[in-house]
Image (cartoon, rainbow, N blue to C red; front, side, top):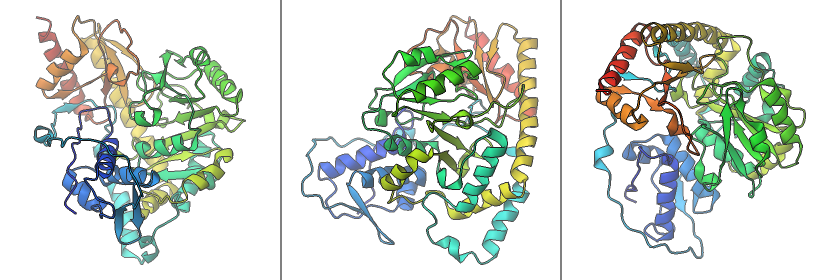
Length: 466
C-alpha cells in the first residue's frame, strides 16, 4: 500500500506513538485501510514520517494488542480480518509542512541533554567491533522476550551494588525507553485502577492510558506529600523519590515509610518508582531505592540508561515484584524485545568489565563541576535568582522575580537562540508560582560555554523588563 499519511504534531503533549496509533486505528475503522492490507514496514514508515522506528513499534504493538492488525513472521503487518468494526466519520487532515524543519538553538538547556564530549567512544567502539568481527550469527535471530539474559544479569548485579535492590534477572524486562515500558506496566495493573502522579511531574507518562483521569498529588521540599495521597481513592502512584522531577526534591525517610505503608494497606496498591538519574547525586550518601526497602512486593522499579550512557541508546528496564511475573507472562506472551540484541550485548560487556562504573564516576565529577560553576555564576552575577533542586541530577530550577509570564520569557529566549523550559510544562494541575520558574539543564552545555550561555539568557530577559 502507499505510505500512511497522518498528521503528527511534535509540538503537542500527546506522544507521537499515540498520534500514529490513533490515526491508523481510525483509518481502519473508517475503512480507509481495507482488511488484509499490508502496512508499511517499521523502517520505511519511520523514514517516510521522519520519526524513530521505536515510535512505529509502540504504535504497531498497541494495534496488535487490540486486534486491529496481525504480524506475520518475516512477511509484515496486516490489517486483521475482523467481522465488524464500528464506523467513524473522519476528515482528512492536512499535512503540517511548517513543522517539518526542527529548530536548533545555540544554547539548549533541556534537562535530558548529556555531555557528549566525555563519552568513551574508543571502548564502546571496541565492544561493537568485537561483536561484528567475530561470528555472532546467533544474534541475528530474535532473542529472549524480556531482553538478553546477559544484560539482565549485569543490571541485577548493578542494582544490588548501587541501589540496594535484590532481584533476579527473571524479574527484569528490557525495552526501548521509558515511553515504551510504561504502557506495559499499566496493562499489568487492574483496568479500574486509579492512578496518581506527582504535580509537577514526569510528562511522558501516557495520558491516554489514564483516560485523562490521573490524580495530581502535590510535592514540597520533602517530595510527594503522602498525606494528600491518602485523601484520594488512588491505588497506583508514580513517583521519582530519589530526585523528584522536575523540582529536584528528595523523598524524605519519613515520607518513604509512609508511602510503603500506604501501598501495604490494600492488595491492589502499587508504587511505580522511576529512578531516572539516581547515579548523579552530589551531596551526602546515595539515596536508597524504595524497591530495596519494600517488604511487601508493592514497588515496580523503573530506570533507564538515557542519562548514564546516552539518550539515543533507547535502553530502559523495569523490575517486577514476583507477584506480577505470572501476569506479565500471560499478558505479553506475544512480546518481542524492542532493543537490538547487538546493542544489549555491548551494554552488558561495558558493565561486566567495569567500564560502566568508571564512566559514571567520571561523569559525576564532570557534572559536579558544571553544577558548581552554574551556581557560582548566578550567585556572583545574578543573586536575585532563586536556585533550587541542586543536590542531584543534571538540571536545576531557577526562579526570577520578574513580572513577566513564563511563556513570554520562553519566547524571548528562543528569539535569542536559547531553549529554556518552564516548570509549568510539567503540571497536571495548575500551581500558582510566586515567580516564573524554569528548568535549567546543564548536561549538554560544555563547561567552558556555561557562563556565556547564562549571561546571554539573563541579558535577553533583562531587556524584556523595559
